[in-house]
Amino acid sequence: MNLGRVLLGKITAVSYEERSATVSDGELNSTELKDCISENSLSSNASLPSVQSCRRLRERRVASWAVSFERLLQDSVGVKYFSEFLRKEFSEENILFWQACEYFNHVPAHDKKELSYRAREIFSKFLCSKATTPVNIDSQAQLADDILNSPHPDMFKEQQLQIFNLMKFDSYTRFLKSPLYQECILAEVEGRPLPDPQRVPSSPTSKKDKSPKYCCVNLPDGSSSKMAVKSGFSIKEVLSGVCEKHGINIAAVDLFLVGGDKPLVLHQDSSILESRDLRLEKRTLFRLDLVPINRSVGLKAKPTKPVTEVLRPVVAKYGLNLNELVARLSGEQEPLDLGVPISNLDGQRVVLDEKEPTKGRERQRGVLVKQTATVSSSSRSQGSTVSLLQRFFSIRSSSVSF
Image 1 (cartoon, rainbow, N blue to C red):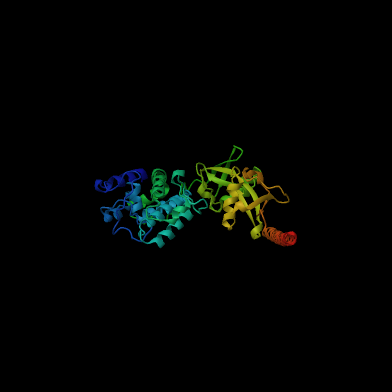
Image 2: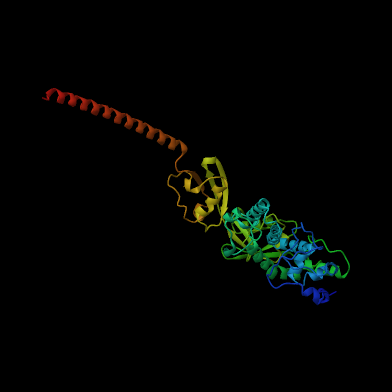
């Protein structure tokens, strides 16, 4: 059966009445979906338009996902399959951020404790400089951490809308063309249960095609190399061969999808990279000794970053202030220039110590107190001498007066 024809037929079957329920590009409103999705679900999608007929939505569930991105997000099953598609594209953080914002939007404005907790959770996970799963928003939408001091339900609206539009005009289009969606629409037409999203390949495959699968890796020197990928082998395992062939230390690189800015997780199965274009970037490796807390850490950073930009968040993590510390190369006395690129420290050991060690300050204070005491004692002695001289001359004056 021709999947394209099936898909077209199913989409056509969606009534004009249902289509009229969609909204314009990027527009979000606050109408709640009742009876379709649980109020407590992160997929409640209360910022999306209401559904006029939940029964019709369930009957033509998969076909309705192609009506609009808004319609897809109204269906918890649709969100599940779209999330799995994003996971295979290494951008699952977008839907997770959008869902977290949806939940946050419905926290009562008077519940300051819950607002504060959820706001900090979203900021630390998706938006701060050290976020565990950062989302890609432009600089104008960046938030300073002081906004967390006065949280309110609409504080992430601009960031949520940016990610919404990113998914709608980029990821959603590819999702509708993916084997995952085609398998779902075929199962719906044939009356079968929807397939397990984790078992459907991210790209079309042929059972008869047993030829090796490859991806293209753009190397740091400007050249490119084909890399064989195979199910059951991690990205790190297949990448190590390429790195060894070209004399590259695999510990000192990050791997990206071309056009992406988030490093790939190397323990994932390499088969997900089939036919993809990748970019390999070198990184600077060095060791940092934090003398005040007797701790040593290994660091990896982009070579063009200035030293201060790399060190500041690290020392802050351990409760230290970079302005109160001095950096030196191990075995040297001359302080480091923190404004130079971090590439100058490749393979080096950097020592961070206090500018004025505590013991030194205590010795200085002791000397100062001693000097003060000496000056005070000297002043008292001089005062006594002057007093005696004044009394002596006073007596002499009295004895010679007439």
